[in-house]
Image (cartoon, rainbow, N blue to C red; front, side, top):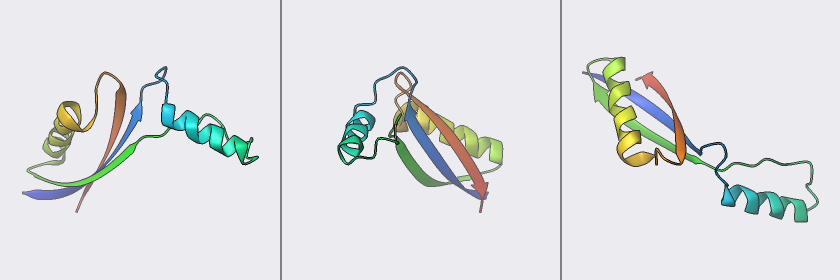
Length: 84
């Protein structure tokens, strides 16, 4: 078995209002940082996975994202996989 580290970036899909992002954007504006805009806030997950191959490791992480880590209706995710 091989060991892999996965980094997962989860973001709200385009077109879905990012309430946290808007709140931060308004706060920055009130601090006279008007040059910052279009803020989107997401989640970052780091995990280790053991599998026979990189393809199988990716499949395991992808399934975990689809079934638990991300909401497939509202969120998109990207997986970066590295062999340890």
